[in-house]
Amino acid sequence: MDEAIRRKIVELLDQHRLMTVATLRADGWPQATTVGYMNDGLEIYFLCSPQSQKAQNLARDDRISATIDRDTPDPMTITGLSMAAHAQAVSDPAEVAKALAMLPAKFPEYTALPPPTPEEVRVFRVTPKVISVLDYTKGFAHTDLVTC
Image 1 (tube, helix red, strand yellow):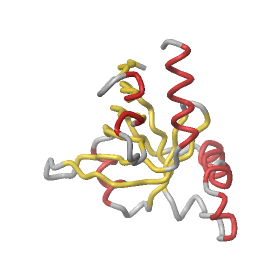
Image 2 (cartoon, helix red, strand yellow):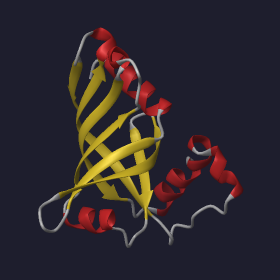
Image 3 (tube, helix red, strand yellow):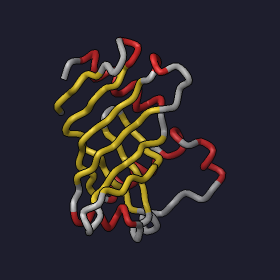
Image 4 (cartoon, one colour):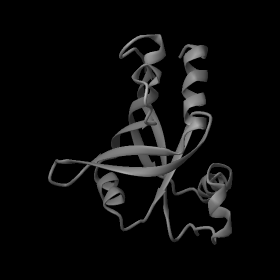
């Protein structure tokens, strides 16, 4: 991966907190859901309830499509990411702890609440396979496609 593109991807991941994740339901229909996420460079994690439809969908098929962006009044300033990835449940206690430790930096307003315990949440690691970097400042609908 080109270093300039990698820096742009990490910059966009660092600037945002919400990601739309599309999983596949048992009946084959896609299901899109908004999740908060944390990242350390290109390492991306999100949490959800172990009983959620997302968790059930991902237990059957770990493939996702995801987007990260924000609304802007000027279409020529649209920037964001779209990716095809795998989202796998993290079972290693050290990695779960690492992901949960990232929460306060990304979501400081949640520090007043009791932190979730590993039993209350399922932590997923997102491993991108293909990332489309949207940057309309370089021209309408400009994207750089990156294979990871």
